[in-house]
Amino acid sequence: MDRIRLKVFGLSYQSMSTTGAYALVLAEEHDAFRIPIIIGIAEAQSIAIQLEHLDSQRPLTHDLVKNLADSLGATLEEVSIYHWEAGIFYSELRFRRGEEILKIDSRTSDAVALALRYNCPIYITREVIIQTAIPIADTSIIKEHLEKVQAEIAKVKESELTEEDLQRLLEEAVKNEDYENASRYRDLLKSRKGE
Image 1 (tube, helix red, strand yellow):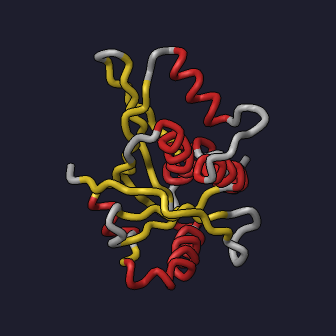
Image 2 (cartoon, rainbow, N blue to C red):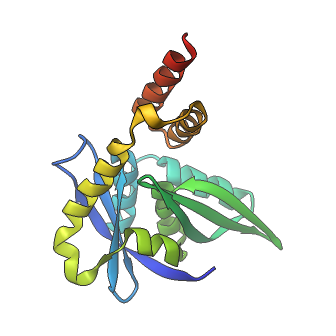
């Protein structure tokens, strides 16, 4: 699988979008393109603290995960953003414990927050780049791209989704802690089943 290394370019508050939404902007190492990812306020705060080299009074969730992994002798070697579908990025954490490699599914925002704490590389597949990247000459349209991504997610016509589709979306929403959409998918499933 052909991959490109990314860096964290920065964070941007999305006042035109859902309340509390931020854009995590990732960039190719030589600034050839940008990839905006919508994230929540807690993840944005955790990432911002690392980017600004600040200390929190108490460990944040990502600090806790790092402390736990360190205590178990595991080190995060890399983050891989390997898939994109319906506005959702899919990522994997690759930990090493001795000779053992542990691969763990992760939300991309959490994966980036941990990558910053471990100072490890973040990679993305070419397929995801093709689907989501904005060339550097077009960085002024990042906001427009984010709105398109949000519109694409909203465009999915619920009436065209099968019960299997709704179940999969429900599970993904719960996994991504998107409880508003999880409730909506649950209600749609119940109405389809006549409950």
